[in-house]
Length: 290
Image (tube, rainbow, N blue to C red):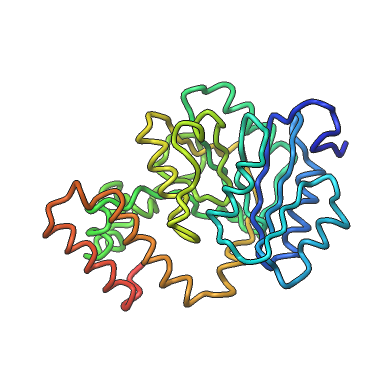
């Protein structure tokens, strides 16, 4: 049964928010999967199109009229686009979903069930698979000073299974059981409306990268938990938008990391340590250390 935005006459329990930029064919497959595999409760889909040049917006209008479309006249970035969708959303639960994904038959129902059964959990991430079925690494620790130093010193690569030295990239993570994690990849991030009301929207000072890291950091700081839930599974084609601007994306990623440190650590770290971290981040941009 294909139902969605207002088909049941009731306000939606779930709002699926998708920010798209020039990924029309992947977006079509994503939307098709959502309507083919709906949750057990009313839901709505909100697509924010960031001035795509590939007629993505026209495709949504023509093929998925039940979706809510917000067509921007310019590319406003990932964070601002998601904030537009969140502000338009009516659901008790908000799902940020990348357009280069496809949900499984029970993905959305399992996610809602987990959130209802665990009221202390403010957000969850999904197990992500490549199109060939391989599990995709999709959780990381926070980029604390210690974690970044282990990356720069090469200890994370030398001991990739160490929960101490590889605490940032978490290569030791098995992806086979639910557990709390610092930051699941924002490709699929389901958040309670109550959490958003408490911690606020995404920080638009992070237009492309680290907006989800910053959001997860604030969610944990506010006393909520974030969990990885393998029963919630998606296919992720991966990096379809950022691949179009790969070199610029790498530079922006490191700038965003420096911005993250300026926001969350500048007032907490001794000035020499803070200066060292910033220098290492800038050096890594040139050396492409991570």
